[in-house]
Image 1 (cartoon, helix red, strand yellow):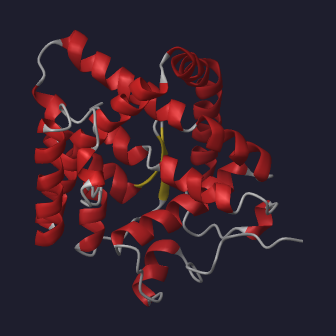
Image 2: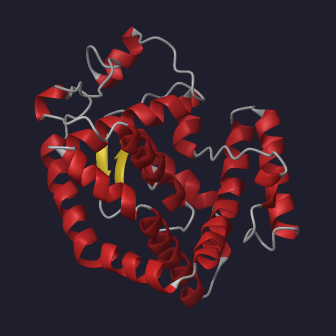
Length: 259
């Protein structure tokens, strides 16, 4: 695994932040559409494995990390890896011919890698340079490849077949791929994973309390969030092509209504 790929797979940070805003609504399994999830028996089994693994290992380690790491150190680590993600984002914006965003990503990397002390300080955001965080899954979607079935990756969590294939591209352009010393390489991967998990602690607890069926809740939130990101926040109306990938009627608001 490359450190950079965690930036996309743990796009769950954004998903869970979104869930926090609607967390007051209780959900029922019947409230969700399932045509996008033909692999549901496997996915639910893997979701349970990931949850058990997280409760046994990742969550306790993340809590310990949060406890011993002062907030400025925690933020600096997050900023450092976000700066790495901006390199991947720049490549993907270029592949999508979004030249303005490509320039912004390059500007962010240049500013944060110098004035920001290798990205530890997020100077670029303070200068008004937005962070886009494009990835190869989004690039494939931009060029018309549908997401395919929902797919839960071991340890890493929510994905789709398209986004899982896109991980190969994320791995290829990740700067850490050039690191030859295993100690540094795997240390960076581990630190990135722990730092991301620590950032999700509060939102993860809210998800568990808000949803009767966390699996379905997270699945539908992930699919909707990814579709929004592929279309840069402005997804078009559903088409026959969308239904071919997601299933009939997909695109209706999956958010359960309060009873």
